[in-house]
Length: 445
Image (cartoon, rainbow, N blue to C red; front, side, top):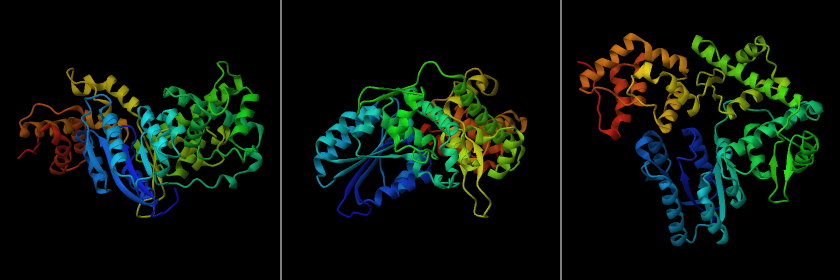
């Protein structure tokens, strides 16, 4: 694929349930696809009843939305595969197929496209991508690479080369290599050399084996094996990487120090958000120093590298500088697993004994809501507990003639009311989410 080649024809097939990010990422990715040639068709597959805002965003970007009810297992995969085959039969001019997915169910489809001599551009999150797909794709891109950079990581070549080539730095990076291998295995995939490299770079954008003194990725892996950090099993191209069962005390020390550094950083961000204090990079750098954490000890020469690495691990999100010119800020990011744990611990107390923990798709939306409002779980919990907010919520239900709302919409309304949003504005937002289930709220007279 060459940039801006008018002779290149592409078709895009997006498994949205499997791979997606925020609207800015989607826009940047779509622009990158269009820059490579003529886009014949763009399809996006999902249960759009549960993703109405995302549906509007993707429709505005030119995607044809294919609705797949989420109660049918693998239905979206089957439908997307059928569309790909149909396109293959009717659009002979399409030479490049862009598949946005990490699902291993598409292995046979990618194989069929390769047999036809077609180019396959795979876009996904490498941490949850089936290993077989990397081998079949002719081009690969991490979707997170399209996320607009709120802070720029300076060129690694600007770093202290003597440090990057030191034994201590190499040992720290070898432990990060072990982390990447475990991430691939934990996702149920085979830790092939190529797959692990994609994950390693995704988690550690400052990683550069050349600046560490190696001729390339393979030599770095061979060194890591000679030092006992990994084992290479099998012959190329099927070589797999494994982590030894026994680890050295030094490795345990690096792992524990890294874990402590991230936990301290996340707690610092949460506390400062709760206190209404600055979460600019400089303020957080000073806070980390006061906490006794030295990011240099875990292999980062700059605070920006450490912050980006925390964001890559899904621990925080970095927000770009605002229109007033204020510097980038950091806010907490909550995973589906964290929110599920929080709900299981609090659902009966906050919502009553008959309410179930929301499905993962709604937990994800709650995570996105917290990001959008730059709020912490502690702040959300405070909104849900406040008597005045509960009274306003009950008044809306009474005026609307309904006894209760589903957990996600209930949380959304309570959070909006708790943040001082006018009732009329709050119910517009919540009614948008209630549309698919036929409930309409109204404010008290």
